[in-house]
Image (tube, rainbow, N blue to C red; front, side, top):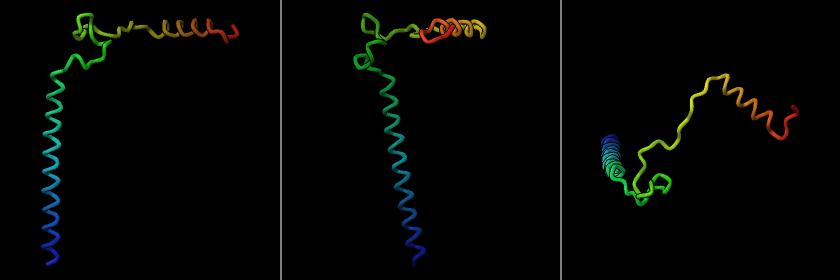
Length: 86
């Protein structure tokens, strides 16, 4: 008799867990669908151009440096700092 109670309780808990998983997946799908249709009024102002539309250009452009050039720049910055002994 006790085994039947355990099996019934386990089946009930597993059904509740599966139902919660399905609800969570449906909520996530709704959220993902809404993210595709962005409301430009809610975007950060720096991401918009003068007309209020999102920019299509990169916001950060980095120049590639070789290792020796980077070290030389860091050395120049260190030597130009106020606390350097050079």
